[in-house]
Length: 317
Length: 317
Image 1 (cartoon, helix red, strand yellow):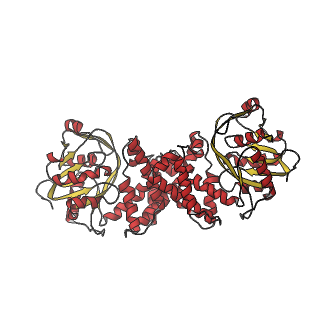
Image 2 (cartoon, one colour):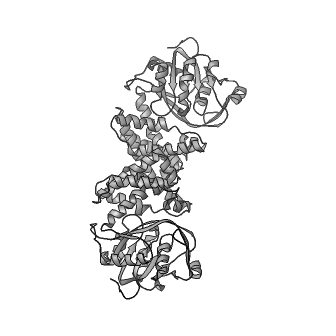
Image 3 (cartoon, helix red, strand yellow):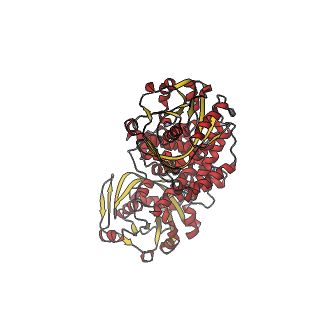
């Protein structure tokens, strides 16, 4: 897809905890990176990005900052790291920035996003990443990286079948490894998305409804049990898409969570900040997919309705 | 059971919004009423009870107030209107106060209470009431009656079969009607308990988890739908006990709730006051009974776990 002789160019849509962190690392490694910003545009254009990281702090005093896609150059790779609640903007944002030979990398959680992007740019030009990153935006252009950081990369396929390992996956991996970001490749992006949901659905959802940290939830026998039951429903949903997740995966997720420091989930951070929660991608789309296959997920459905109520109340306040 | 020549004597265990209201009305009608109190003992002993009611306010400057069952006379009828979270006290409270020929009237919500009382006083001496009363305790010995007030009375049976209409039911009804409290008789107390749960399980539970009034819940399409799904699970639980509740009953409950003024449920009032919620009687016991019959109620089970987590957090604070 891409010219090998010059560094690949990256556009970052959504320069927050995720896109800001990965984009800054790519720029530091010598890649050509262009950041789209909204509220933080003035600060970042003037002062660049500050990354505090467990792997070493660094500053980028100058970055290519934009507040309008029409001012951006066309790029080889467009990284979509907006909140999914802003994905209705993608039909306007993507076409002006994506090179004819370029690809879109979806870094968001949940299901169904790649389909939306494929409808805009064509199904051959979409890849997805599942990110394992603990980072927060603590101020405009100021990101704090606490834990993890690795990425799982896979090809989107319109028929939901495994997409294999492609040449362009290896090219992108090269760039990320150059930026010291660990990247794994998967032949089955859909499976990786469902695996991430095994954690996200119980802990993001319950943390908001119960106003609780991961540690508080894991310390309570009933909520640990409920989290496990929700995870089993996610596994049933995955199975309805021919994605097999073993029971030991659930056990591993629970064990890892019990070992984590008390942690506010990203959905809880959004909720506390008064931002709309990403419940369509993380809850509604998986429910819809399983339902279409005749699989009923009663507890996930209940959690979704509770969160939707809270989202709507946020909007009123 | 009871002597016809003198007014029947009543003991009220739990002189709050419910027991205080009904007991005061019985005393005003000339019955011999004895009130057991705990925190409000000093105030009520000195100043009696104040009832503000939609049917007319009244005061009882002098009532028979006790803080120890050993000081109380033995009574024909002992009304149990404690919070169920204090029912572990009943083995100490009931035996000293109940006449040899007396009966216990359980006015609490939920399932399984009559069984507990029967284990203390014998299964022939237990009756149950389902109360439809909107009242709050607004201060010590001060009760505000907002709406409704009627009672459904039935016999407890150890085999869960309908207990018919008995002579002592008619005697007690006579006393309550004398006190201008509308009392209906049911042959099937267990059915009446399950019918009350059709409302209590969704609205008490969700009002706490979502921090919402009945009006807020009914105005939201998702929560209205979730309430209906929870009601369907209650109906399935009732069916597992051979209690038939028709779909039109659910429809009627929802329609009535939509017409109510914005209303804080009793469980929400308890939670906001930092009191333990009555989730064992209202949630755990129905779940247990249905489960024993092989019926799984996933959404009620999830709501119970959420409430149990919140109850345990209350205890820590």
